[in-house]
Length: 112
Length: 113
Image (cartoon, rainbow over all chains, first blue to last red; front, top):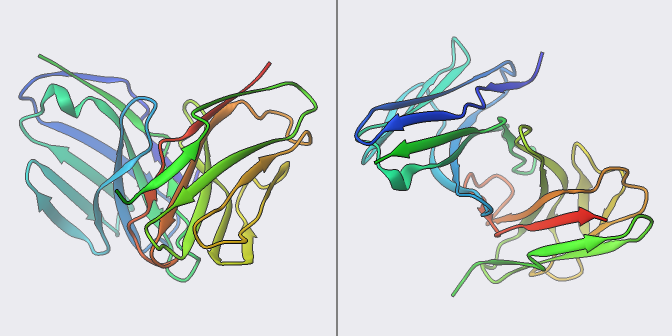
């Protein structure tokens, strides 16, 4: 079983749609939960991070963590063409040097 | 402007050659990382360093080497022992190893010809 599973997509939605991106994980030691956005041929940039179960909101983005089910989600409201990118979930274990464990990434395309 | 600079952006290597990828940061970050990205596989950790003159292997270190002689610099050498080196290589840094925000460079795309 892979440590992190993420649907690679591609996912195509119309502008204004609500997007749901998901990752499941198997390692109970994961303590930090992150979402990165990566535009084509660029480095990833951090969108959101959290360390507790529940929801965290930042503008049009909401990160959700369910530690009991080992499941995290990223919701994008009112999606825009500029949101078209690959979204990577990432996980970290405390006291292991800041190493990140990434999902495979989901490619999202928002059509005008 | 503060940030992480990777060079070159594109690199071509002949089989059997060693090549070195550059990573420089002016963010005064202690920790630096090298990841490899292949299509459909996300990012995988090659090496990381939390302080100068010290570094640790990541999950896929075989065929790679690094050095950390200066805080600002963390070059990665892809040796001829790496059997499948064609990939997108990303360097990252963070203030301390446990800081959750890692800043990434723009990557180097290495192709074996």
